[in-house]
Image 1 (cartoon, helix red, strand yellow):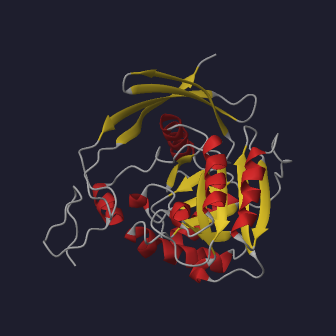
Image 2 (cartoon, helix red, strand yellow):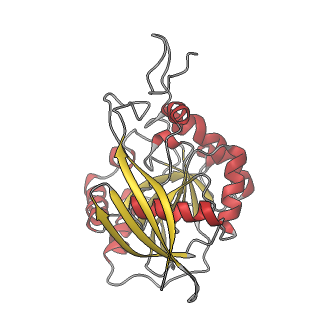
Length: 314
């Protein structure tokens, strides 16, 4: 099989394009690429998934629209989930509404569904006044994108990762539908922590998830925290790279200012006497490239890079 060149173009007429391989050849930066969001809707669906995920399921139209409208109102992301190997879990299928709040508490509502109409519970959970009680001690959910009908790399690279993680943590790990950033496959998302990891294989995924579960986030493979915006994600990743791994909530973004393609992000450590850092971020647009295996058009993306880290003097 002919490999793609560094711009992502196939080198021969019979070559098959793989976006994740092209991204690795280009050394695409992963930091700052996690999509923003703090609420997730998970719907267990063990069978094959349509390319457009939940939208394409053959569900009762009224129920599906109700769930979609409720999710859209709070900017929640709807993901299909299944255990590795498409095996159904014991008992009825499950759904969940998972939230991340400003204090890092896990807020989760779980339910089950036998009939399509049972999924209306998702809309009720999303629209309920006030958040559910926090459960900071509850285990996170580890999602591995394995949505092969959406992008080939998600299957080729995601399923071996899902297998390895499922063997280690069978109760925490689910395969999931499209999470964004196909070229960074295999992608792992820990929710409701809201942490994206990319560029993983079976071995590195075990190391990354084990560290995460011990509240040690490493810069390697980190795409970003979903409660932050790309320049802020990049600033935190730069600090983790400079000073070593730290807990999910070790760093707090205090201020962000922008001047054209330059950001200054002020970040402070968790302890009261921790220093504050000013991280300078620069951005630029890439040349137009094919960014997904199924993409029919060329696209440009924004890249964010940390160019300096300075201690803020009192």
